[in-house]
Amino acid sequence: MPVCTHCAYPADYVYTTYKTKSNIRLGVCLRCDQFLDPLIEHPGLVILLDLILLKPRVFLHLLFNMGSPPFDADKGIAIPALDQQRRREYQIRKDMMKLILISAIAETALRVLPHMISSSGVTPAHICAIAGTVFLEGIAQHIVTITLALQALKHRRWYPCDPPEAEKDDAKSDGRQKHFLPTLIPLTILYTSIIPLSLQLLLMIWVTPSQSHLTTTSLFSTLPFIVPQQLLELERALIEAWAHTDKIWIGTRLLGGMSAGFGLRVLLPTKPWETTVIILAGWMSAAFIGQMAERLLVK
Ligand SMILES: [Zn+2]
Figure 1 (cartoon, rainbow, N blue to C red):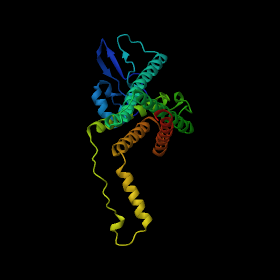
Figure 2: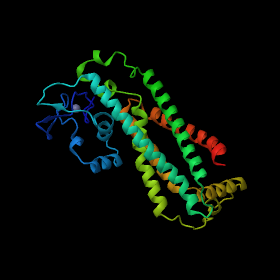
Figure 3: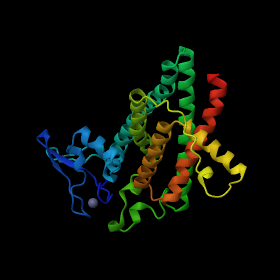
Figure 4: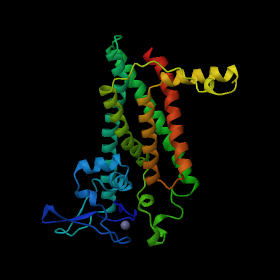
C-alpha cells in the first residue's frame, strides 16, 4: 500500500522487477510525475540521515513503502489487495516490535547507568523494576497519544473516511488517508524516539557533567533600584533549580518532542497545536504512570 514520497498520492507499487530481483525500475507518480520513492534504492545510512534531518519523505517511506512488494513484470500478475494489506500489517508489526525492544533497552540503560556509575550499585531486581516502569510508561504514552489522535481524526472526518476515499476526486486522493492504520501513530513516535535516545545515551557515556558550582550572580541585585526580597528569593530558587537540572535530559527530551511532533505532522492532517497537545498529553500520562510505578516497583 505505497504512496508517493513527494505528494502522498496513493500507488499500487513503488517499483517493478525484471528477470532478476536486482534489475528494477522505480515507479513514477501519476500526479507529480516524480519517482514515487527513490529511498527504496538508497542504503540504510541515507535513511538514517534523513531521519535525523526530519525529512518528510523518510516518514512516508518508513510508514507506507518499506517492505511493500514490487510488481513482477515477468509474471505480470498483480498481487491481490488483501495480500498486500496482510503483508503491510505484518511489516508494521515487525517494525514495531523491533523499535519497542530497542527504545525500551535504551531507556532502561539510561536509567540504570547512573546507578552503575555511582557507588550505590544496582541489583538485577532493581534493573527489572526499572524496565517494568519503562514498559508501563510506554504503554500509557501510546494509549493516550493514539486515543487523542484518533479523536482528532474522527472530529475532522479524516479517519474513518467521510466520504470514503474510493469516492473522492482522484486528483485530490491522499495516500496517507487511504492507507492509514492507527498503529502508524505509535510507529511514528517510536521511529522519532530512537535518535534522541541514542544521543542521550552517547552524551551520558562520553560527556562528564562539569562540577562547577552555581554562580550566584544575581541579576536583580545589580539593578539600580531596590528589588523586593521575595523576588530575590525567587531568583535564587530558580538559579539553584537550573543548576541541579539535567541539561542533557532536557535537551534530548525537547529534541524527541519536536521530532515526534514533526513525524505526526507528516502522517496526520492535524494542526500544529493539536499535535503538540497530543504529544504533551502522552508525555504527561507517561510521567504520571512512571511516578506511580516507581513508588510501587523501584522502591
Ligand atoms: Zn507524487
